[in-house]
Image (cartoon, rainbow, N blue to C red; front, side):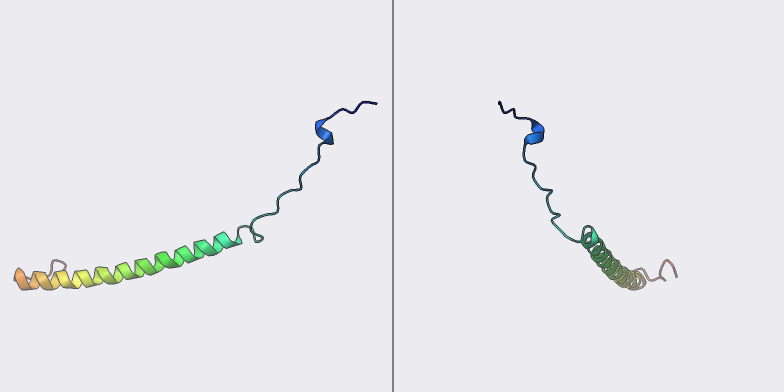
Length: 71
């Protein structure tokens, strides 16, 4: 009786368990966090834009002797 080695006779490894149990739920949390960061940055930029506009209008009135351009 001879033994033959066939690919079907090889032991199979069990399927790997997922690294993160929740799947893509953590990715949604990261995207929400990033959206909140973008919103905070845009709010800060709006405040800086308003500050710059006020400074520019004051400079224009002081040094050019006129009214602001959008006046």
